[in-house]
Length: 220
Image (cartoon, rainbow, N blue to C red; front, top):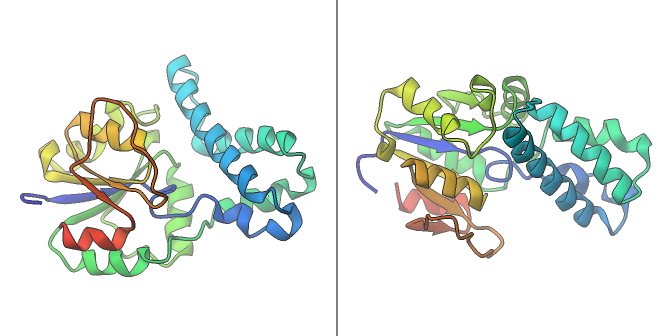
């Protein structure tokens, strides 16, 4: 991949495992923990899209709380666990290969940044809790534009900051809708497909698909 000046990462589900909060409570939740975790994540994303369409913005932490409340009712999780789950969401674990790959990329003459639905404070705490605060040049939040991915105004943020062309960005996400959003915008989107999923039909097919972040080192 040539002429890349910035590598932009999605955060949730891409660098950090969104199921790790529920997994840390699986002894209390029981066998349904994974179904519950997936439902929470799906509901959270649906709320971001619906709020963008309705133009009724709430920040990502409020959306996370709202989606958790619905998910706990659906899966009949004891409400006494609410604060524990929310606190664990603030310090999600990275996927195992992520820290070392990021450190290797830091040695290259490229901008490294996060572009996420998360709030600035959430993202800062997430990065700090995983000892990654010296890796990223910038942590971009959709709160700058007040609308969620995949709105094109979100993908504009790093372009305006770095004064570069859209095709000079390598954009990584594990979310197919985010890859399509960035790819249709003009990024070189690279899909991290950890679970052998099927890509969506949204007018974009990524040239590169990898099963974990370490494969990025063979592309960049």
